[in-house]
Image (cartoon, rainbow, N blue to C red; front, side, top):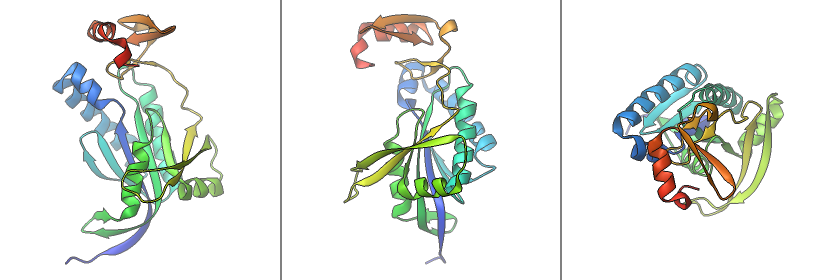
Amino acid sequence: MGSETSIEATFCFVDIAGYTALTDTHGGVAAADLMDDFRELLRLHVEPLGQLQELIGDCAFIVFPDPVAALAALEALYTAIAGREKFPVVRAGLHHGLAVIRANRYFGTTINLAARVAAQATGGRIMCTAPVAELLGQAGSPGFGISHRGLVSLHNLPQPVDLYEIVLSTSADQYAIDPVCKMQIDSTHAAGHLHFNQKTYWFCSMHCVERFAKNPSSYV
């Protein structure tokens, strides 16, 4: 057995919302290119403030010293992504607590809980647990709001968990979202648009227009 230590930290999972849809629509080469871009965005905006522990598929596991550092990194990442047309939005989940570290790997229910919290977030959003919300409130950092979402039952956890959403002041939507491949689209340069149920949808390519037109109810 290797040596191990206990650490208190903020654990974060970030993944690309709609990665499967994008891969299905645009193919493996586009998915690989997207992951190269995502890895570079993480290097530029996240790694200066936290440790990128793992990147599996489209999901990044990041360890931060505290929620303030995590929030600063996520704000930088979300702002960078918001300015990139034809790039999907991401979602994130945070939990703060104790974990065991052995051979530079982290173990414990704290990490599992952070992953479950991330699964509750939709594209463009950041979800967190009460410990993260409380520490951010104590720090009094400007530029964000915290909205209480209530108790939520999470997969494989015996008791519901109190969840909060962190709302960034910079999170205003700059682009529309293609409902087929989930990429951000500048509506003024979109390949096309369609109306469905009194709403307008914008598309990155005619291929996405055609897929949506065949079965719109499956995409909204």
